[in-house]
Image (cartoon, rainbow, N blue to C red; front, side, top):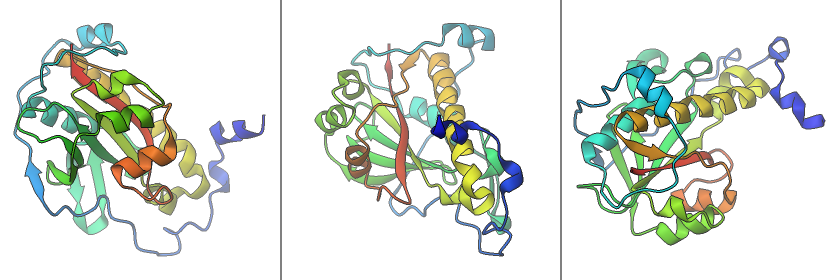
Length: 235
């Protein structure tokens, strides 16, 4: 089928990239105005074998809130920064990414996090903090945007990964779309493992209304758009 070409390797065809043209590399993440600092954490010490063995897609969560320390750990595990070379705009996170391009921003739809008001936030890995987007209750909105999947709105928080394709296009042009899809899997798998390590549950969600999810988190749907999401809650 025609669209299978998307999955195949075509690296030899990559020529005349913006990188080769000398165009400035895009920023690794947006600036953040009103930053909520996240605390340090000391958790997730289950044996790795046990974490992998217990990993499941879980769609039922308790009403117990996640702590801010647990949220801090989950964000660090999925998009935390290990090293940043500011002069070269090169960032190394806790997940792999093609050419260290890291094309995602992590948005959070918060329902039940201790010490965090309900609302939508964006994670700043460089500052390990939350950037406030808008405060409100969005349970009904997120259930509607995920085609009626009620368990998403019954979680403590929804991780929403927004793709910023130009971060990878700048370096890899058309081959970017395959690597961006692969990178999304890296990020979500880390969330599964980190959540399992602290006795939380998650479930990856790829079925959603694109326009509604983009509007909900406040991205334009062209240069930035939702690509994947996963609710998290205590079990």
